[in-house]
Length: 366
Ligand code: GLY
Image (tube, rainbow, N blue to C red; front, side):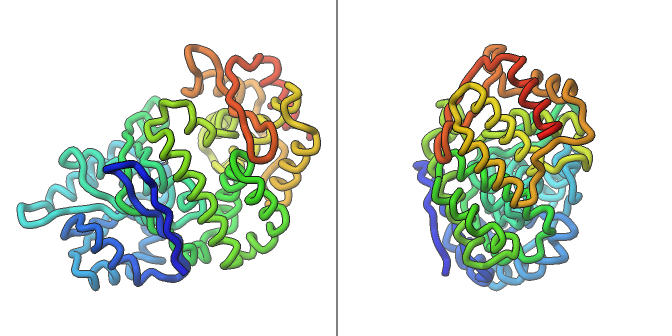
């Protein structure tokens, strides 16, 4: 059964629909929004092969003209080159009798690019997120941060631009590669730690079912995480009230691990976030803020899910130096989200360098 979460952002409010195998409802849901006549689906070749026809069919049935634009299945899609190419193709299709909107069909990369394209084409056209990965369903499709990468770093050209609908059909996760499912679970663990002891305990008790993609548990997870994200975004849409920052738990060291690995295959985003969450938990434990018991519960869950709990093949100095260049620095001081118990975090600035180094080094041998 379809479940709905309203993201209340005044004029920019929208629904997140969480359902299972209800793709036929997408056309009607989009039609109700009255956002245009012509849908441009932005996706990648693999997702196009898996779900392109299905999505196209239901949009055609709802009376839309449909065009599909494909971008590479890697971070390369978030480049100036592909962004401009897609914009040019949309402009060729455009005419006075058409009203174009965008459908982002894919994971976080497609969602970020498609949302960014939507935010700048004619100074903004509507877009709908149809996330196809766990990570995108629980996190990146919600919240309106859209961006592409520049030569100097990831997500440097971006905007806050909310979608008009997020349509999360959890049945799409059936074909998701296991490593991507596990990677997405790192963000799910994050939500449990920052806001929901119930979600955390449910994961502890049911992680085997989750890994087997049990329909009920996956729907619960996507719904619970979407609700948390929606409520956080409502309170701090533009990330300037120090509230949205809690969603960055594990991301400070996590991004540094990704950067030190040069976004190579060394660690996936989820694996890096899991390691980042562990180092934040270690810092918190050393500061006397997190109990040993909760630290071990966090570590145990990360391990059971199949995420890494130790770091191999990367240099501590490279990670530390990447962390020092992190954009999360505030007035030259580092800023960490630290768990204080399951379901609660605090934000601390100016964590001593020695403690950060120690927490990264500890990951080498624990
Ligand atoms: N697009 C992800 C976010 O807004 O947080």
